[in-house]
Image (cartoon, rainbow, N blue to C red):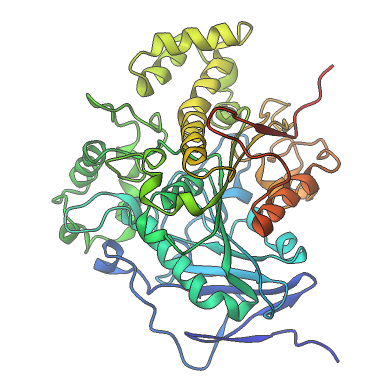
Length: 482
């Protein structure tokens, strides 16, 4: 008997029609919260009222309001997706399941994009390989930019993080209808999404919502202090010509929020007690009095298995596409280090000693990678290993993309095609595409994707856990030498 091409699943909110393909069933645009419109953009996520009849789950949802992103010569469309697709109901998830029966491991992915861009519609987040391998994949949209992360009087902070909590609540209550096991949920994210996952580890309300976490190139020390956040708020309010309150922001259309984003670029967020944890690359982040890496005991972290790591040349993404690896001067290197370090000269001296042959561009990339990802990752891994013995696994991803005449290297985002087992896709291979013209190394996607799936099943990706004084790091895709 032929299986139904458009299967229907009954959920607590109503029935939804999906689409069957060779890897399983896909259900799209499932709302986990009410549409955040008007004043609701600055309120906690509200329960969705549900629906009658059968909801169409075969088409993608709108996306959060967001600006276009330009990475020079590098085509990052597979990462950012289509950009802003207007529509109020964008607090949604997509579900890709092998079948809506059984109790399979669940993985919930949180996209990156600097807290201002991205969506689950990006081509890189296709869940076919996870469904093929018996995992139910959930990909999440959340509020971005001013609605998601601007700290405003009269509004709860970190509304994008509150959205993720609501989405995980939806998973707990609903995923069994799609064949997922609500007691075996792994939440994983990359870049800003990974920073949000790290914050969940330190959030009391997250207890009981997931069992495992994967932090890919996140920053456990990337939150703004309230003082830093208020500088961004003041600049946004001034650019809009209103008071810095949720009430004053509520009637302003999303288009105006996007129009003032350039006025927030490059703000000096250094204070007497804190450097800029994002080195000026984004005016938005979490707003916390204590960094997540220092507050793990407050959340579920002690009971969570953690897989955490970075790429070896993270900073190349921000330099290579515009030729800045070649044009960077020593003054540029010092300027970046000064944003994020109280004693930049000492930091640079240590880097130069460790990399005596590095060009200024390579040093600048190393500084960016250290500030944005490596320092916070190391601090979070050590903190987690102290409170959760034998449950912390680290990795370092070293495969060098051949994009941009070989200059992109093991940059930020390059691991994603391997995690999602998409590394052989033609749209990733060209000089201006993420992996470059060379074919992906044989077996690397199977190794990386397989480790992520194994971790979601068992809490063990296939290598030894690290201890506070024994920082075991698995090398994935190390470039060939010789």
